[in-house]
Image (tube, rainbow, N blue to C red):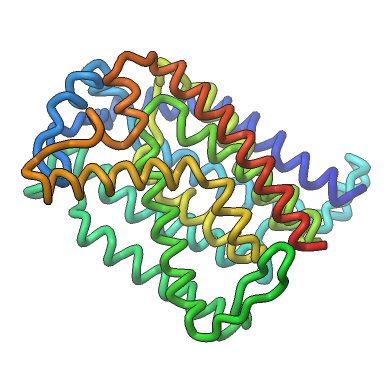
Length: 353
């Protein structure tokens, strides 16, 4: 029971902190001039239709991922303090403070991923806001190189230090991969970080989908006996709940690449830690579909003399362009994401029976 109290308390405290801190952060970012610039160019050609659809969002505070990561680290720090003074606090509140969220076996890698990848997104966001550099954002090649470096470090750590050498397949069992586990890990890490970033194009869209998945992994890690990692998943759920209060349409603040890259990469690491890859793929189907729509669009434009498959890619912007309301797109994709997350969770639980 004390484990469950610890986990749910982590969610509640984080949600309340986020709702209290976020208005202050929004005012600060407005004062500092950290407003979003709408890109009029994409990887291949102009993005004039996209710029027209989103012109009204120009100047909305962005880089909210800085606040989000800061709140997560604050809650981790508070848990360390609570554990240190655990006996006295237990006498006062009647609740055991046996754990902190700073744990070598369950959260070190996850926290380092959140912070390190968040720094990549922070640089990208700042370049875009200040319109620095030739591209006015971190180039795709540089961003990919940095992600590959971090992905390789963690992949090697999983393979060599934690002895992850294969994946669990529901209804089949362990599939040994050997050294091939490293490139698979790198692929999942980079694909997830980028797909969340790509999906973050409408108010609340990516963050609602992430909330469902982190909630699912809170349950999966709890079932696997990783109570501290479960609590960490739920503090991310709490921070996303608080953030969504201000990010649903019309958004008062955007997460930016700081949050999308960091939370996407963090989710991928948790999926690999729990050995639930196939379930994770099912849960992430919307993220995957959004990424595939961009790949299809780019391929078509490159090899078909600029001809497009979609009005705008990724697909959620295509739906906008053909007349769907932003709120309708977000809510329908949330509902679909909820169904996929439930299906993936069932698959994960079956795989661990």
